Image 1 (cartoon, rainbow, N blue to C red):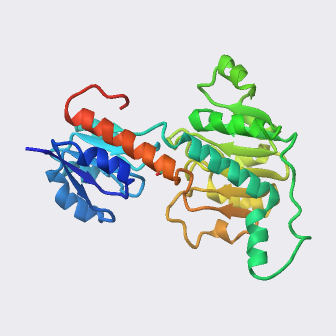
Image 2 (image 1 turned 90 degrees about the horizontal axis):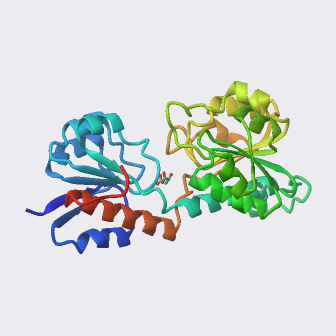
Length: 312
Ligand code: MLT
C-alpha cells in the first residue's frame, strides 16, 4: 500500500514533483478545505503537508488516526498544535532554511520603503498628484537598527543593514558574544536595544514568551519618532499598543508583513498613513517556495520510510 500524503495548502510544483516521483507515495492536493472537511478525510492519510493557511488543531489531530508526520513548508509552526501532535506520536517537521534570504530581503525592502515613504508617495502619484513636499524621508546611513531575535533571518538582516552603514544593536537570549563579534554587531539587553534604536525589527518565532514582547511598556522605552518593522509573526508586537504609539507620535512609522489575525482586512492599523504593509509576503519568492517545498517533501519521505531525518 502506498503512503498517502495530503497537501492542504498551495505548494510549489518542485516539491510536489519530489513526492510524485516516489513510487511508494500517493499524492492528494486539496487546498482551502474547512476544518470540518479536513476532519472528515484526515484518517486516510499518513502525512500532511501545510504552509500557514491550514490550522492543524487538536481536534483535527484527534481524527488523524494514521498520521505519522506533518510537514510545514516554511519556518513558523504556530499553526500546528504541537503538544497534541507530540502526545499522539506525530512528528512535526519544518523547513527552517529555505526562506531565510527571501524574508531578510523583504525586511530590507520594508526598511527602505518605510524610511523613504515609497508606498505613500506611490499611492499619491497613482492618484495623479505630484506631491514632493509630503514625503521627506530619513537616511538609514549612521542610524541604529535594533534587531530583536538574531537567528537565521535576523543575522541576514544585520549583514545587509551593515551595507547601508547602519549601526546594529541586537537582543537574542541565545546570542553569544562570539557570534555578535563575528557579525560585527553590538549585543545588548532588550531594554537597551529598544531605547537606542532608530529602527526596530523583530525576528523571533511566536511563542508564549514572545507574544506581545513589544507592548505599551516597551514602546515607552523607545526613542521619540522610532520606526518599527515586523516581518516575523503577528502577535510579537501588540497591535493595540502599536496603534496608540503611532497616535501619540512615539512611533513615526511601522512596516508590517504579518498580523495577529490573518488575513488582516479592515484592520485599524491599515487606516493610518504611518503604516505600510504587505500581506505576509516575506517568504513569497519563487526561490523560497521551491526551497521549502523541496526540503519538506524530502523530509516527509524520510519519515514515512523510517529513515533518518534532519529536524523535528
Ligand atoms: C514562514 O514561517 O515560513 C513564513 O512566515 C512563510 C509562511 O508562513 O508561509
